[in-house]
Each structure stands twice: as structure tokens, then as C-alpha cells.
Length: 162
Image 1 (cartoon, rainbow, N blue to C red):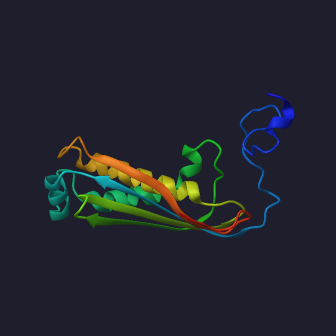
Image 2: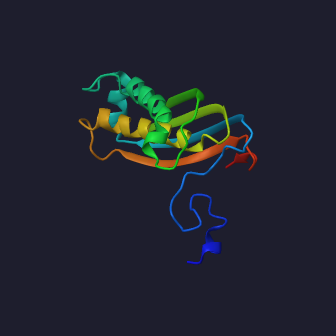
């Protein structure tokens, strides 16, 4: 590819090599992102988790904590993500009997030069993976589904709502 073809690709330098975007000229603003996902399972597995009888212990508390910890580690997991001073991470895991399973929602907030979409998505992903890990002794066919960004606010590109 010619050098000028890379001009609009922020994660590539003029030679087409991956690079971390320079955000040093950006203004620090309050930014927030919300992501969701779901974990689907058999009714028996759902009932066991709801009753607090899973073999590995408190499935939901462990998954929630894992999601919070994961958001704080996103820059270590995703190669070109900036390490950010995260001010808030909230992970909610709600039972959904009709799935059956759980809806996971993560909200991440910072005041910085770049957004926290990846942190919110990472929080949901790791919370879902942890829920699977904590419940796999009950069921191996648990499904992690529909992880996506719901909204983001702040920054040059403006707000986004799915």
C-alpha cells in the first residue's frame, strides 16, 4: 500500500505498522461507556446458581469482581489501548429467567483524553467468562452471547447510543 493510504487509519503509522494513537493533544473530558452481554444456560444450571448451590461458590459475586478487575487491566490485554485513570467501574449481573441465564452490564467512567469503550466491553467479557468458569462443573454448554457497546459519552466523536 502507498503511504498516503494510511493517513486516516489512526492505529497505523505512515508505513502501515501498528501504533498507539497519540492522544496528548486531546482535551481531558469526562467519558463514560456502557456495554452489555448475556450468558445463556440450561434451566437447571440457572436454578442452581440462583439458589447459591454452585460447586465453586458464589458465582455472581466472583464474576462481578472479575469484571471490575478486568476493566482496570484492559491496557494490558488489548495491545493498543491506553492505560487510563478509571474513576468508576460498575458491573451488574441480573438474572433473566426467560433466557434462562444472566444479563451483564458494565459501566466505566473516566476523565481523560480517550474513551473507555474497550474497558466496558472487557469488563462484560471477563465477567461472562468467569461466570462460565464458575458454573462449568454444572454445564459445559453455557453460551456467552451478544456482547456489545450500548452507549458512550464524551470525546471529540460525540455521544453514541445503540
